[in-house]
Image (cartoon, rainbow, N blue to C red; front, side, top):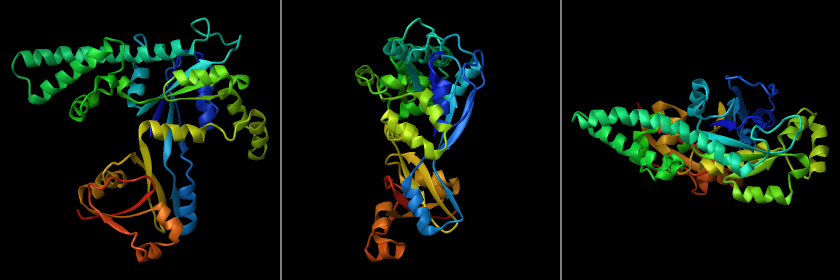
Length: 351
C-alpha cells in the first residue's frame, strides 16, 4: 500500500512523516520537489503467532510505503510533484491545528475546515486540467466518426467526472460504474483516490473539546501531535511508556493510523505459511481467491485450480493443520471465493 502525505505548507507534513515512520528527514525544506519515502511494516500479532508456530526461514509482514509529497498540489504545483501524487493509492491530508509563532500559517491563522477544503480544491483543479485535455481530443475523434466503443465509453465517463468537478466536488462523487471507472483508471484522478485526514495538533490540545469537535467535522479523521511523537520515537523503547502515560496515550499513532487506513481503504490481510516463509498479504476486502493468488505470483492467478483455505482463528484454536483437518475446518474453494480477513491460503495451480 502506497500512501501520499499532502497538505498546505507549514502544516507539518514532514514531521508527520517522521512521526509515523521513525525517519529523520529535514523539515521546512521550502522549494524542494523531491518526495521523502519510507516503508514501514504493518504490525500484526497474528503474523507473530504464526511465525512462532511454523518457525520459518523468513517472516514477511505486510508493509506501507509513505510518500511525503512536498509543497501544495494546485494549479501552480510542479509537474513532478503532481506526478508523484498520481502514483499513490490513497492520500493522508495533514491539517494544521497547532500554533507556533516561529512557523506562521501561510493563510494567516489556523482554519482546519478551510484548509481541508483548500487541499481538496487543489486536487480538483488538477483533475479538471487532466479531464479537459483528454475530453478535447476524444470529442474530435468521436465527432469525426472514427471513435471506438471504448473511446465513447471513456468520453462519457470523463463528462460524468467533469460534471462534478465543475461543482467543486471530487470525482469520487460522480457515481461511476465499475466499467466506467476502469475506462478512466489510467488517468489516476487525484479525487478518485480515498483519503484519511490527520489533524496535526499541539500536545495540550490533543484531547480537547475543540479537537474532538473538529474530528466530527473532518471525514475519516484522527488527531496526533506529530512534534511530540517524533521526539518520543527518538527515545529508547524503555523510556517511551513514561512519556506516553504522561500524555494519556496508550501507544504511538502508527498502529491506530494503520487500522484506520485499512478500514477506510477497505483492505484486509491474508496469510501464506510454511517452513520457508510466513507472510502477510494485503488485498481488497472480499476480493476473489484468484486475485489473492495473483498477489502472490502472476503464475498462480493464470493457472489457478483451487485454494486450500483455513482461518487464523482455526489454527489458533486447534494448534495445527492436522487438527484443523480432523475437525473438518479445512476447505477447498474455487476462484470466486471471497477472501476473508485472516484467511490462510495455499494455491494449487498449473501453467
